[in-house]
Length: 248
Image (cartoon, rainbow, N blue to C red; front, side, top):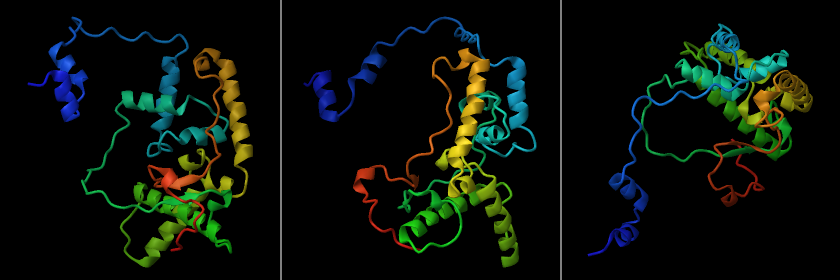
């Protein structure tokens, strides 16, 4: 009869869960001790200001990427991760839609590796046209998440919605795939200057509260470099990104 080690090797099961089940650790009596509050944590008033801002009419339907919108206006309240943490504590971060279960499907994979991929228009360069189609796919996907996405009664209704939506998407929306920049700033080469302005604001925030950033160092804006994927393959080495993509 095989011992536990041989049985686990034959079945491919780890021995750790079996050991834990056979020798459970005793749980401490009483409720867990509360975590100590860091000395440089946000004050009650600062937390209230963050939540008031995120729950305001302007930002109530927006993700905490409004961090970038506020930086554009010279305002820094806290990091994106802190915004999420405060919202979670108030049950403000959750999936509100009913989720349907579907079998896995093959998804299209598009790569944007030039700044001109952000923005409408055509180009004589097939690679540029392909990267623009990547951005268009991202915008179309975002339209489905838009809280104002309607049921269209006519093609005129659809055109009116798309005119307003794509104007917002290109000129106001801060896209996480391009370093939380607006697509129009990436398209016209302004993103580096914008990122430099953000860096000045973040440096001032660190100077005002150096202890809050002692562990991670000087806070910096998201990196803009590198290609932008739509549905990036799990093993990128299996993809030949130099091959001309198929045009739609």
